[in-house]
Length: 326
Image (cartoon, rainbow, N blue to C red; front, top):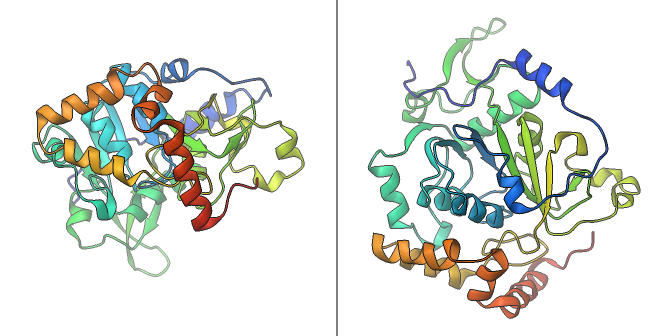
């Protein structure tokens, strides 16, 4: 079967090795503002977003992207929904490697955002979640591809950019999935120091590989911690400083999504987003009120219950899984 999808995000691994080799390894402060961090994204860049589904996604940063009116990006819709849905609503990207998108899990599907994909205004190359994760893994390993067995003979293979190959040892058929090297990645974490050392508590999905594969890495963090946090507990260095280009302190920066061990997702607000997305007029009004007309992300939180709402979500999370203990 010959795949027909456009190959997106691929770069020569040797070129990327040279790029990463020249990247500064100095331990210098990388703290910056949300607006300045968004400035690292350029037109036509390939953007990767960390987290997954409605969990640990950098919502504060994504709001800032919409307010900056960035257009023409390519985006990875990998284990995603609210993150790439918001970017699609803002017309931020017109091409995507998609494995999972346009659904708020059991809550439902945002109809307006589904239409953006159905009308063809967003060009898609399709992958399974595993295949897209392995593309990041190939890049993190400095390889041009990895052989896999999933997707073989499926419509997903047809609409991907994978290539069939024969194993030289066994004669078995595999799919070669090409490495994915994003231009910029943004990853929300539990804690980071000023240099960019970052800690994620809980499931990583592919975030460690995404950080290794991306030319620029932006960390948004619930809190800035002293570097001794990592020196005394090196096993908590999920992402090392030398991969990172910017650090932005962003308390509650994943709201209304779930930040494991911190705060639960705001189901009521997510349902309000779904209700607003039923038609273009109400959805555009929702975006104006909750993103474009907000002074900052704290203003957005204030409009939707403020710290009282956050405290309630923190209480729910504590009761479910226990609080943050470093």
